[in-house]
Structure formats: C-alpha cells, structure tokens
Image (cartoon, rainbow, N blue to C red; front, side, top):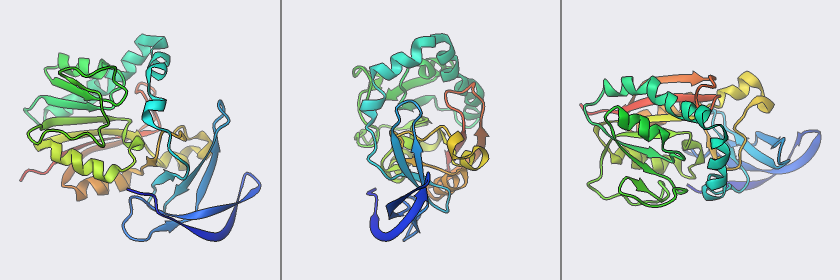
Length: 266
C-alpha cells in the first residue's frame, strides 16, 4: 500500500526546532484519517534521525524511506546475534515452549511456515515437537526443500500450498503492505489454520515514553497497537484466541505484543 501524503502549511516543534512536515494518511485506517502528529527520533549509536507519524488508532508508521530487509538482516546481522549463541538460541525457541502447547490444542495439523526466520532454531524446536517446519526469508543463504529464499510479501506460493500454522516472529512491522500480506496469510492457511504474531506494541510509547521505546528502526515501517491489530485480524475472518503484552527479555524482542489467531471454520 502506497503512503499517501499531501503538503500542508504547518510547522511543529520537535527537539526545540521548527520543521515543515506533510500530513499523513494512516496506511491501516480506511478513508481519510489524516494526522500531523510525529516523532523525531535519533539512534544513539548511529546518530541516524527518523521521523514517524502517529495515528489516533495507535498505529505509528515511518515517514522516511524504509531500509530494505536485505540491507538490515543479512549475514552481519545474524553473526552479531550469534555472538552469544546459547542466549540467542534460548530467546529464539522460548516462544515455541510457551505457545506451541496452546496452538497444538487447536489443530491436529502439523505443517508450519516460519516467516522471516533469520535463524533455524525455532523451526528446529517445532520439528522436535513433531511439526513439519518450512521457512521463508529474503536473507536465507540458499533454497532447500524446506527453505525458500525469497520475500514473503511478493513470493507466489503454489495454489495447493496450505499450512496449519504460519509463524510471524517480529516481522509484521517490516512489511510495506501488511494488510495485503495478512490477506495472503489467511489464504495460505488451512480452514482451521492458526497465525502467531509477535510485533512491536505502540502502547509502550505511552508506558515508557518515546525515548524509552526500542523499535524506532528504519527497517520497520508500520508499528501496531494491540487493539487495531486485533480488529484487522477479526475483519479477515480470524478469532483472536490469545493476546498479551510482553516486556519479558526471555523473548527475542521485548516491548511487543503476542497474538494467536485461528481462522473461523464454522
């Protein structure tokens, strides 16, 4: 979905400096929900500045050009994560230990797809539980029978390809057209298939202040509020059977929300 903007003669003061901005139309809300509320954030390490719109629905989205996943999550990124391999591995598989029992109560199927998996540890953990685990990642090293080296948003899956579980661990915020991608995900699931999502939760901006929020990253595009994401999933024919806020560092990312949604099949 393209980012719709129009020029307005307006100035806001951020960090003590006036700046001319454009009004932004929320990429998630229908119609002309226009906002001029912005955040101007600076990365402490790189000193890179980013600008973000904030809609009344709770969705926050990037005003600037988004950094491509292949430029962010390549070999150097993975190597950095694996400096403390055991800690990262424990973080990566912890969601499966917590949520797989709930998911397995809801389906007899055991075919799953890990979207934007980055590392194989979660797939390995699910395979140990009896799942047939597949993965797709634009930064994967190569194509294999179980791994697709491609962009989930644009890859054309065979029509017969269906999954019992699609796992989206900290990737929804990177999609440039998340509404289309969630439609696609619903089509890829079996009639009673499940979707797991962990993604940045904008309510932590209110809890911790904008400077304490940890997801101002140019590889992200749209950051969701829990209420808005639940509403969108329900409009796509899902029952949200679990949703919770997470600030626990046992998971790969904190200041996130976790949702499990199941397609309505009756």
